[in-house]
Amino acid sequence: METKAVFAMIFGKLEENGKIFTILNARNDGKIGFPGGSIEEGEIPIEALKRELIEELNFETSLFVKDCDIKILEKRIGDHFSFETYSIDLGKISKNTMSEII
Image (cartoon, rainbow, N blue to C red):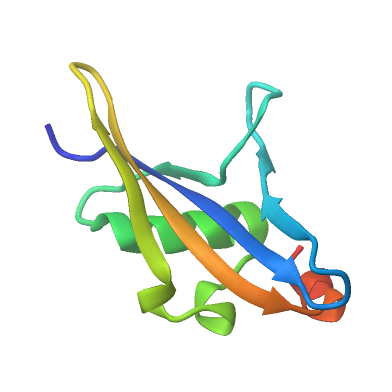
C-alpha cells in the first residue's frame, strides 16, 4: 500500500532561554496534532508535506530549513491507511524568527 498521508513534527530551541518547542496544529475534529494531511495524486510524500505546511500553517519550509533537515521518523502501513511522519529540526532560533513562523 502506498503512503496516503504525511505529517511533520516541527521542533527547535529558542536562543534566548534554551527552551525547546514543537509546533502543533488544531485538527478538523477539534483535537491537536502534528500538521500534515493527504497526499494528492501525482505527489511524492515530501512535496505533499511542504504543501500541507503552507496550507495549514503558512509555513514555507524553504525559508527556514534545508531539505536535508527534513528526515523521515516513522512509516506506518496498515490495511486501510498508511502514513509517514517527518521531523523538521529548526535548530536554534530567536523569538523574532519564531513569531514569523507562527
